[in-house]
Length: 161
Image 1: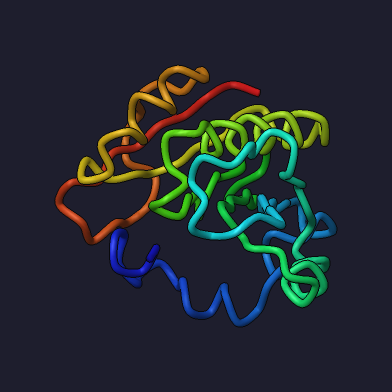
Image 2: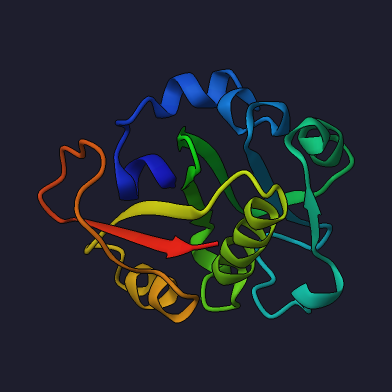
């Protein structure tokens, strides 16, 4: 559960109620959700053949048709030429399959394709041990704090697009 692991700050509840909101492509953002038709308990399933990246407006239709959201992530504009990757999350039973990395790379590619952004930033927490190494592996580097984060273990990263 994202709220348990990360905490409910940075307007999470407001964002969830107002999706797509700042993640809407018309507002310079994007959000992707990985879905599968397979059972939520079949961790060994062949995810590569069943996942679909979908825009948030398709979310309800996919859930209504029996799909399960496995992972998500988005980006939004935070300053001219700079966007922020947010809400990258993978359900616990599907971690280790590369879904977080796939979403992060898709978000970076999508942001770069807009030609609106020169850089992408993100913040994460040291209590999410695989996040830091994954972000470093796809081109992010540590940077100075760019937003307020109430957590003592916050880390900040930036990547060129």
